[in-house]
Image (cartoon, rainbow, N blue to C red):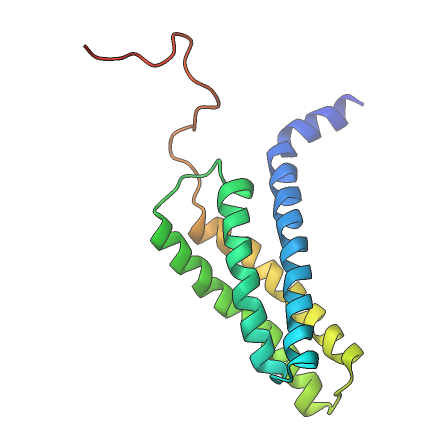
Length: 160
């Protein structure tokens, strides 16, 4: 039991961070998949155009969730810089989805909704692995100074 407690203490911040990242990712995935099917099936935009539009919208949601919840304890290096890098890295991750959907649709000639959604899930899974690693490495940087959890004992001093 003591071993389990030490193991938890050692990895608790990583476990909590992964849980938050996964929660935001799950909601973004549902948003992406719903919009993907809406644009492809209902509006007939085509599989790759639908993927780009759906991913752009779900990525905006994911940025806000990850910046202000998952990685809020990390140093903030500027909204413009983070947003640019976030979208650049999501653009790279989008390639995984585009390749798997394109392969299923145009190479395997599978045009049914089930094959389309399976290809999307495979692409999202591969992209998620890349995104988690790249966000920690380049977007949401490790804090150089500990971020205070609460105000100091005496409150905030005012200069007179």
